[in-house]
Picture 1 (spheres, rainbow, N blue to C red):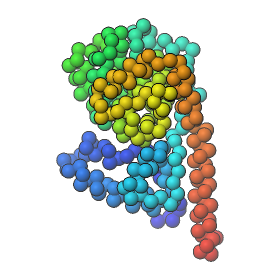
Picture 2 (spheres, one colour; picture 1 turned 90 degrees about the vertical axis):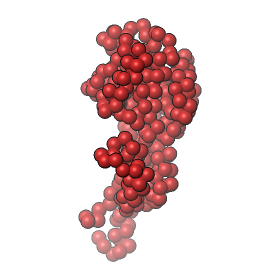
Picture 3 (cartoon, helix red, strand yellow; picture 1 turned 180 degrees about the vertical axis):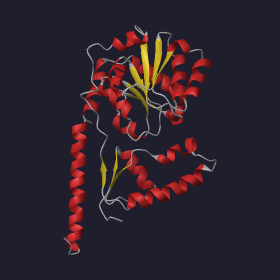
Picture 4 (cartoon, helix red, strand yellow; picture 1 turned 30 degrees about the horizontal axis):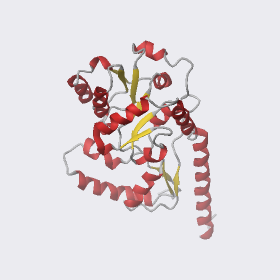
Length: 285
């Protein structure tokens, strides 16, 4: 090896996706056991381990990860790009959803995102509520199947993949942005929506449980409570007062790219100094 210090950022809990994406049929628990052996080897030999939120670091430690140095450093949000726009209804006019209450999900349409649950919650909302699903992915046929099964085709818009430059307009046209994913290590799309001053609805799990304060800057629901809990949280978000929107934006701005970059630079400097000290102790230049 080059014997250089290296830092690992755990952006995804890869073991969570095994049940959805294993290329061959094997018992998930066995594959997960071997996956953690591999992950432990890599992370425990690194100079430092970064996670975006504390719950993820806690999970790593529960699986035997003992970092030499550990830091909680979020992925930064471009608050110059993701911000409230002067004409938030521009995209609504383009999508033909003026005058509607707009629920939105932004991200890959994959099985672990549980987007079908949001569609089922939509069916329980009033006829004046619609949904925009931004993105594409392997679970889209199944999600579209639920849309058709519930007779919601005229209330759900699939945009497909969109250019990242189009996202600010899309976020701004939403009334509420929603995630049903239980495996997020931070949840960038939700934080981008918050930076656009939008109330958000998320499961009270992992990253969301520490980023969002229920009723203050967003709304949390018990994922174990099924669609009932989700629907109630959506209704709360649709009826929230302006202070929630303002708090949502302020929370997101505290995760600016500049703030997060400074934390990264501090860590890299510490890792380099630790390496120098180790070499000096061995009498090496």
